[in-house]
Image (cartoon, rainbow, N blue to C red; front, side, top):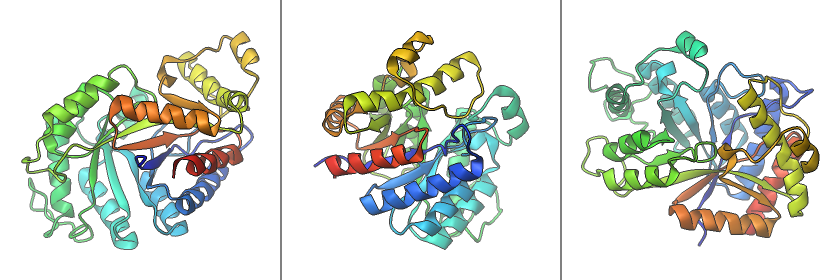
Amino acid sequence: MPVPLSILDLVSISEGSTARDGIAASVRSAQLADRLGYRRLWFAEHHNTVNLAASATALLISHAAEATETIRLGSGGVMLPNHAPLMVAEQYGTLANMYGDRIDLGLGRAPGTDQMTAQALARSSAEPQAFAQNIYDLQGWFGEEGRAHSTPIISAVSAHSNVPIWVLGSTVNGAAIAGQLGLPFSVASHFATDQLDQAIRVYRESFTPESPTAQIDEPYVMAGINVMVAPTDEEAAYEFTTVGQMFMDLSSGGRRKLQPPIEPEAFAARGGRRNPMLEISAVGSPSTVKGQLDAFVERTGADELITVTYAYDPAVRDRTLQMLADVWF
């Protein structure tokens, strides 16, 4: 039986559109994913970008939860250095009280932005020891008494919520933290490919179910992969040039909203090439993508896949969700 499929949404903003348009399209996609049977939908946290509206994850989760019925909603992730842990506990505890056992809290140590913006956002330390202590405190606030382990402060709104915590990472350092804490690990292989296999191995080898923070008995890996599905391989490659242009801008310091797709030959003529950051991608017809996803699962042993689809036209993204569901579920 195929592993579960989930979705990571960065709430992209296309050229000629606004953040309001991007958020509205994101909610429509959430409703479609809910109907199709995707396991979870996570929102990323990014700042100081013109092409992404995923900044306030708790608000996006609440908006999507109102419009859906069964799909799990969560953060992929809350960048903990940007937030006071108590506020995170209160926000996600509130979400759990509003929407029940449908809320996930994915936590990362990166700021999700540039250094200048990170300094403007900084609220807590990104050091591994501080990160682990923050997770331990969050579990206390989500626990029966709603009390953190390092402070007498109580969070009544998060008590008894038991919000599941995930550790996000792209390196062996993040993998080791997830393993030592006994938590599920979401590896950001959709853009960070260099240490993928090593990180998964380190996570599994370091997994400690006896840890006081452990919430699962065995390692659990969710791996990210870029996906674009179209009726033909050629059309999928054409649509995927939107992603290629976005990563070209990222490399060159360009600041543009998502651009319309162009012919692959034109993309190459503009200096475009296969970006190493996009190595973990499944692009093509339904059968082609199915084979690529199967191969990725075999390579990594992933327990779950989380897919990322950028498209200039939101209808193209929704078509990918539909066609992928048709061939996978």
